[in-house]
Image 1 (cartoon, rainbow, N blue to C red):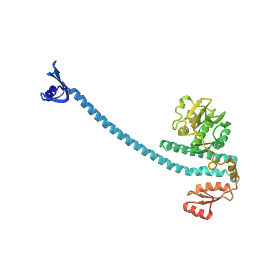
Image 2 (image 1 turned 90 degrees about the horizontal axis):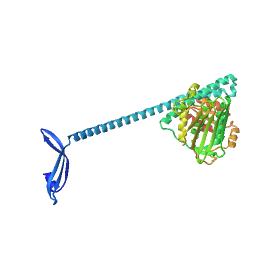
Image 3 (image 1 turned 135 degrees about the vertical axis):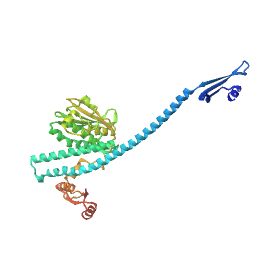
Length: 394
C-alpha cells in the first residue's frame, strides 16, 4: 500500500530494509519504485525494482564486526601502553632514588679519599718527591672516581627530564681564567701548547648557566689534551657574524682525530671511539652530556675531525648581555685584598656528624690560619654559635 500511495502521488521511493521469506529463507531486499507518466502528465504505470542485497548485508556485517574488533584491540593496546608507561616511570623513579642514595654513600668515603691526601701534601708533613707522587696518584684516581659518579648521576637526571637551565650573571673573563688555571699545567706536562683566545667584541658579562657552560668547555678541553700527543689545544670565543645575540665557542686540537664512521656514534651514551677505548679512560658519557647541555643553552654541537690531524668541537649559545654589577662580580683588586688579609682572627665553626669530614676540613682551615671549632650536630652547633660567635659556619 505504501508503494501504491507513493506512486499515485508521483513520488519515487527507495527503501533498503525490506525482507521477504522465500522457501523459509528470509531475504533482505532493496526496493526502488517510480511512477511512469503519459503525455498529459498523468500516472499510467509504475516501475518497481526489487534487488537482493544479501551479499551487501553480509559485507556490512563483516565490516561492523571488524570495526568492533579493531576498536577493542585499540582500547586494549592503549591500556597496555598506559600500564607499561606507568611501570617505566616507576622504574625510572626507583633508579633515580637508588642513584641519589648511592651518590651519598659513595661521596662520603670519597671525602676521605680526596681529603687526607691533600692534608699529607701540606708542608708540615715534609714528604719526599716520591711520596708526593704516590699521594698525587691517589688524588687523581679519587677525582676520576668522583667524576665518574657525577657523570652517571647527570645522565640519570637527563633521562628523567630533570635537567634545568639556571641562568645567572657570568663574568666571562673569570670563567676563562679559571679554566686556564685548571688545565694549562696538564697540557704543559704533555708538552702541548695551550691557548685561550677571546675576540675584543665579546661581552665581558653575560647571562647564562655558568656551571653547564664550564662543564662543556672543560670536558672538550680535557678530551683534547688527553688525545693529543704533539701540537696544541686551543679554545676560541667569538661573537657570531650578523647574529649579535649569539656567542661562539670552539675547541681545536692537533690530536688523533676521529674516523668518519665513528662520528655518528660519538653522541650516544656510553659510546667511545676506538682511541678512547684504547686509552682505558672515561665512560663515554662526557660528549653525550655536553651535547645535551649545549642544546639547553640554545645551541647545537658541531664536530669536524680528520684522522691524524685533529678535531674541532664547536657550538653557539644564546647571548644575554648583562651589566657588570659589583654585588655579583668581585673585582680582581678586592679578591687580592681578601687573599692578603690575615685569617688569624677569623673564627670558623665546622659542623658534621662524620668525624672524617670534620678532621679534613679543620686541618685545612687551621693550616690557612683560621681559628676552628667543631660540632657534631645542630644542637651542639647552636650552643657553640651562641658562646663563640664564629664568623663562618660550615
